[in-house]
Length: 526
Ligand code: G4P
Image 1 (cartoon, protein in one colour):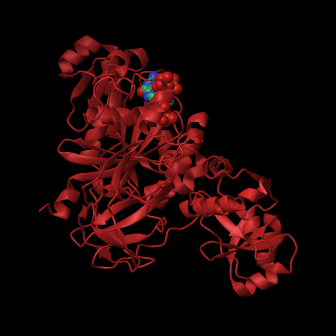
Image 2 (image 1 turned 60 degrees about the vertical axis):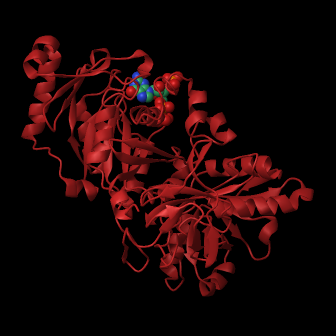
């Protein structure tokens, strides 16, 4: 019998965050190449469109827009370990979704484009990680192209993210003259050879310093100067500070040519913590060897058009998952038979027979499951509540075809349960014209597209003047309803939200009538 805590020690569960185009997809593919999952040449030689659909995209919309909206889980072996890579949506409008995915990871790789440094989306996603105290490994990518000065990039990380960067390797040369990387942990110079389009692992050669100086000349001497400077600055790795999210080990490389891919993968094994006991709502840890438990972090419907099904992704938190076992769904107390359990990699589904802490299981037709829910056997557990983000964009949804009212209602209900948008209802209007509340406007496009294509219910989404929301209570709601410029609507989780057209007016109201309950929602990245 496998021991869950021993299996957990073999696991590393992490996500990659980046600004679009920094190289997240490329790095993911290269991980699979080095994990032996993608056979040589597969994936990386395909055009972007094909490649994306091969790894992570389910939705047509994603393909049309070329962005990643839905989450994917990839599992691959590396150095006797099992690596679980959770894909996160790249667009800022999906940061709420990202937040939930990051709740299921133990670390994140932050990919930067070496010619651009920190970009807007990097910063936002980083803030989400910081909020969750997730350790971050930094990968400075595209070193095979002309980029910025490495020290300047490190300064940028330090200043803009208030995160201490600790280079674990240092590049020798750059762009066309990028030769390899000095591994700062042991001083080895790893020289790489390019392969055609990086389709195969880049051959590596360990070169001693005397030969390196002779063969690489100025490039070597320049790299040595950089390293000496780092030594003087006393930049060294500290595991505690890394795990606290204060310090980030930095790796230079090029995902495209495979330079440095092995080093960063090794870091995932050597530096990233393995799954640890998860803290429950009471603040107590659930031991890894306790009976099975998991947390739902993502619900996705209609992933397979042919089946019209709904998959709840859960991360195993304790114990052993065996397909077919009957688990209890905590909020409803109902039993659920896990007959259809999958690991999901893009459109390919493989049945999961067993899973351990840190692994992700997709449960098909888990209709009552919501993000944040717990499932368990024997010993009940509840996880801390998942906060919802403050919406800043609002639309009223109306069906364009009254004969499709039923489809409209069930579609809205479904998207609400998945957390695609928050759905609010005014008492007098209710289901006919729900208010959709989102962190970013792209969420509305997803709603519109899915209602039309999956539920056959074309809708119009009417823009509204509200810009700010606060959580209120029944008593304050009565007072607020009598005022102009504010609307009170109920969210499907039962919370009452007061929506304001003018933030200044809200500010004044807060000052003038402090007795009103107007609680802030968690702000994006706060
Ligand atoms: P993303 O998932 O973060 O959005 O980025 P993705 O991997 O799709 O990479 C964006 C573009 O950057 C791609 O080029 C990709 O080939 C390129 N790229 C990624 N890593 C590197 C690298 O290390 N060096 C260089 N030079 N380029 C890199 P594209 O032209 O948009 O697509 P494709 O036609 O090359 O597939």
